[in-house]
Image (cartoon, rainbow, N blue to C red; front, side):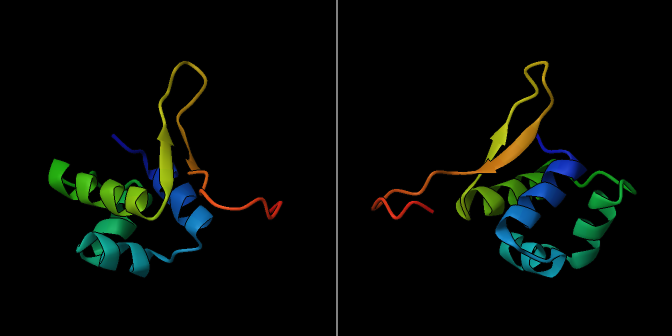
Amino acid sequence: MMTPAQSRAARALLEWSQEELAKAAHLGLSTIRDFEKGRRIPSHNNLLGMRTALEAAGVLFIPENGAGAGVRLAKRGGGSSGD
C-alpha cells in the first residue's frame, strides 16, 4: 500500500511536515512519526487515510514493478508556463 520511504518522499514533494500530513489524514502525529521511522505499521485504515491525503494533494504512487516503488507529483492541467 505505501512504504515509510514513500511517505517521506511524498511529503518532501509536497513540502509537508509530518504535522501537516497528520492533520490532512486526521491522524495523530505519533502515527506518522512511528511509521516513517519504521517503528510500527499503522492499521490498514490509517495507512489508507495517509495515502488518500497525499493523493488528494497531488501525489501519485508508483508500483514496485521490479524497479522499486516510488512517488511523483501528478501533472497539473493548465497553461504552458514551462515550470
